[in-house]
Image 1 (spheres, helix red, strand yellow):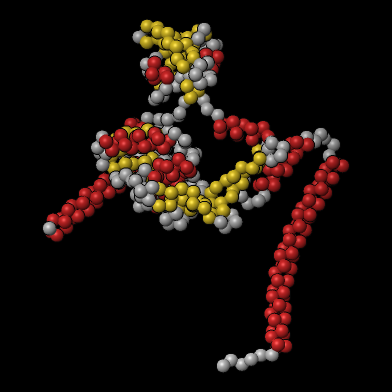
Image 2 (spheres, helix red, strand yellow):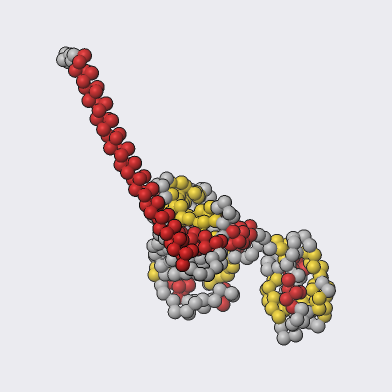
Length: 416
């Protein structure tokens, strides 16, 4: 049997326990208090210094002080001193322009043109799916009149501006082809910029991705399916010099090839983690190679590394830039805004980040010149060493898959 203790002893033990708990709580509270006091003191010192500078300047400076410009400069200076390379301040006008550029859509007829020596508008490109394409306009057509404006070097800017307008409105073009003039009424429509271009290099499908915009995943999916249906044995994706785009678009494109599972999560500055994108179980089974270089950043880095993270691609090229963090924009009371880094992206399978590091290719290949992507059919693999290596890696992957398929078939036959 255990020994009994007296009531007095029990009370004494309880009081000791309370005292110990109270002591730990006091130590923690004091430390917390001291850190807050230090923080408050530092802020007071900072404000005091600014006040002192402001007082000295106003008493000694003889020039005019623009108060609004001064506060903008103070805000920019503050953000430049917080050790966040992506922190940014926008005044009210800059923030309004930022919102407009982010949300605006352009409606037009869907052509790219240049002025010839006569001041006429020469069509250099007709965008796929545009109303100009539907009307039958083709490259090298000459536009001599837009609505009531006859084209000349003086009227060209005014006529060119008429090609853009509200969606659903109409513009009349007089188009000259083979010395014959045809008047066409064309409806302006919201243009979805083409960001994906595809071709073949031998037996391998090649897809150039210029940006990861909202419409890119659909264009990418159609291009990949078309190449596969036409007999591509492997696919090569080129994201060299691509620095812009949406992480969400890249995730949607990875999803077409990756198996099921989480793709990407963010670790916020407070230590919390959140899965941002996952892949479903539907995957396209074909060898894939991605070309990157020192001009590849952001969503393009995630696209390449994400495919490799699911063991769906090999990467060729040079070390990428290393932009893999999440920024948030906060509107201030006066209509200005600040942009801050709130977390870092991680590939879900390998739990690896690329912020400040970049993506290291499986095959590091340098190049001596900058490829011209304006016409991908003219890319020359004898000059483009990175493209040549991608084709070589794609070929090796196809051979490897064929050998694995033959071995699997032989194993099945022997078991029977």
